[in-house]
Length: 154
Image (cartoon, rainbow, N blue to C red; front, side):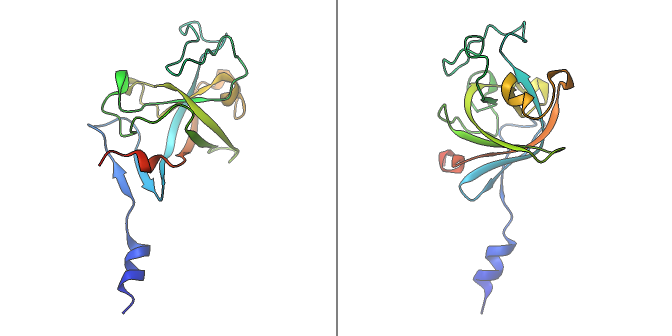
């Protein structure tokens, strides 16, 4: 009689796999894509000698050192095969630091990190500092890409 209700609460979230191991798992939860227990690093600004500040979206992190933003390994360019679909720049991402449970919501401004790192998200220097000092290097996070499930290719 209440099979539909049982199915509603027992359904497993859709897992996005991409073309193979990326070091993280992405799932669909409602309209969002969620990545849990991920490693986050930082990029850009004056503190990153290997980065010229240019991002794929056109925002320069050296010219705008206080910018809050992130890079996601979306399925194109050097991140082809990622479980995260290609999304528009500016898409909102809610990032929660696992150690403190502090949360910030920031836009996607760049593409990365690459598969070889095993990391699932890069934060701008200012965004990373919301959670930990830069010398921490990596932090554990959960993140939710708001509305991104609508962008998954069928």
